[in-house]
Amino acid sequence: MKKIAVINDLSGFGKCSLTASIPVISAMGVEAHPLPTAVLSNQTAFESYKCKSLTDCILPFVSEWKKLGIEFDAVLTGFATDEAQLECITEAVKALKGKGTVLVVDPVMADNGALYDRYNFEMCRKVIELCRQADIITPNIAELAFIADMPYSEKLEDIKSYIIKIYNEKGIKKIVATGYTDKDKIINVVFDNGEFYYASSRRQGGYFSGTGDIFASIVAAGTVKGMSLADSACLAARFIEKAVAATDADGDGNYGVYFERVLGELYEK
Image 1 (cartoon, one colour):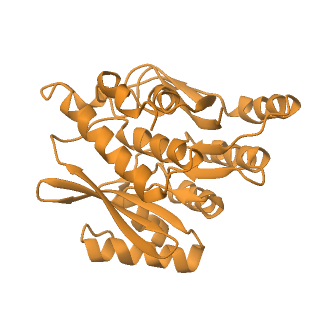
Image 2: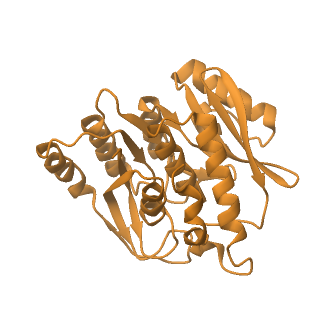
């Protein structure tokens, strides 16, 4: 079976990061091998949370994996807690990435035009450096603007200009910019070696935790199974649309979507 190393945190509540990636990747018939970066009581959008960093464990864990002679078809990275952890993740990626390994980076650092509270510009710079190593990145619009070092805009033409700049200046050939909204649609802008594609879904409700992790996981699993970037992004968009539709619209979005109810949509994809 194909294998993906998933470098991310484990949150007890919030259905994001590893608790979202592992079932989604597994449902697609790909092995998900977690490399936990931290353990959280609940994800960080709640009013309070407790976090135990596992930064000191990351490279020793990778060393043990190397002793086993394991090779990965892809490495997927997500949220990091601090600068030191980002440095360890970057080293872990270098150690795990073989000749045929696809690196998918979800550059979790910003939303709605602003960096997350615990992120500073030095952390942002380190995330961008990690993106330079990636084969595929899946930023939201705010993260895309930071990577491009351009003013934040939600206009489609500006989003495309961010992507072109990143492609020309940073050499990243495959980019999926998530979360552009147009009336009743959410449109994910897909860029694959100079060509633009679009993966759209019906817009429903507001914020839901973990949808970015689900999207990146489907893209990573689809890629190692031989799907094109556009097809894997379309599958991700359709799956999230159905997961949101299956979720209690009156519930707290911090708890995530009821993706468990629609995992069958990913079987044999």
